[in-house]
Image (cartoon, rainbow, N blue to C red; front, side):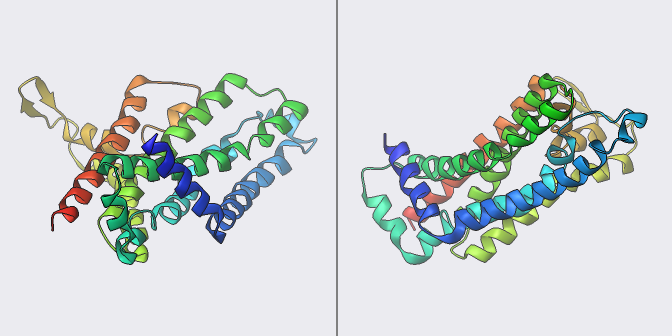
Length: 255
């Protein structure tokens, strides 16, 4: 109940300010542009000649770019503003544990993200009316979008816990997400036959870098593939980031 109370309070604060409305508006505008550009081609009678499939790739494949902007905006104030204004001390004196504060604020941002994602469900409806999309692929694509957003927001919460300045928190979150995105770019630079001995076997550094990438695990979902390794990766990112954010709050409590 403590977690839900913190989440409800934070969610109300989103809608009590322009943050929620501006973020939702920006999200829908960007995804709408992606979908409109695709629909212009898909609904062209000449598209039948090229057998263009009805898919959600136009939106969900580009969701990473959108989340790079949305996730820092949603999370930058969650803990940073509380620390700057001193209201975090009131939360700490309440009968709340640190992990309850972190989890509650994270769930509020995640709930707002789910609301934004739900508002795009009319795109699949349009595809179902005018085309014959693969419903299974659309479902797995949305599952991947939910997991990807959950990981992005968790990184943002950790960044917000590390500083008292909202702008710094946003920049830190953006930089971390870009690093996790682009880390696989360096994988081809490493020799593929290089392996490092480990207790349980051997580690290929190139493959390890690729598997650390936050988007490497996403695109299989847009192809209709649900791999438990991808699910575990995103859940691990969420768990690690929220754990570290809790530890940061505990350290600040005793400083």
